[in-house]
Length: 154
Image 1 (cartoon, rainbow, N blue to C red):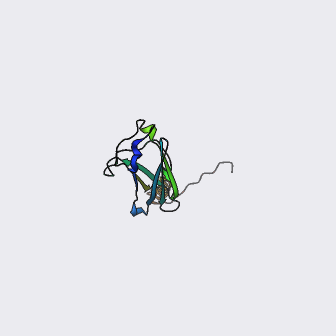
Image 2 (image 1 turned 60 degrees about the vertical axis):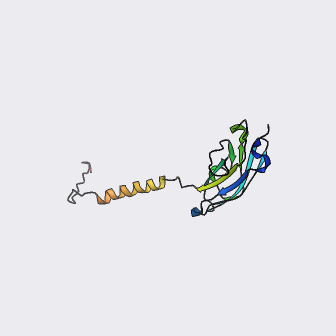
Image 3 (image 1 turned 90 degrees about the horizontal axis):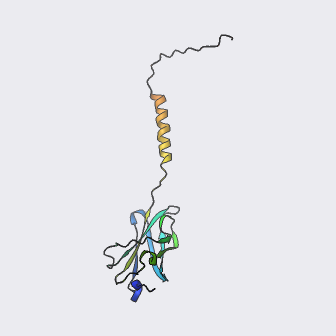
C-alpha cells in the first residue's frame, strides 16, 4: 500500500521547545519505512530530568495540529531523558489504514519537563511535623504531679 502523505516531499518536520525550562527539541527529521514513519530528534534539557515528549501532525502547513498519532513507540510520552538520536516510530498504517492524502503536512515534536510525582516525602514530613507540634503545643491540663503505682509484692 502506498501512502500519499509523503509524496513530492511536501512533509516538513519542526520542533517546538519550551525555552523557560531550557528544553529544546532540535534536528527533527523523518523517514518512511513501509507503513511506518520514523521521526528522529535530539532533546536537550536538564541532565537526569525526565521529559514528556509529544508528536502531532498538521495537514494545513502548521496552522493547526489536529492529527494526534496514537500508534507510537520509542522516545515519546513520559519518562524521556535528554540526549541525541531519539526516535519515535509511528505506525501510520494502523491509525490510518487508507493513508493520508494532501499537501501541507507538518510534524511537530515538543517536550515538557515532568514534575516530580513523588509527593509522599512531603506528606510524611507534614505528618511528622504535625504530630510533633501536637505533643509540644498541646494544652497541659495537669499540674506537673505524677502518681506511680507499684505492685503490692515489691
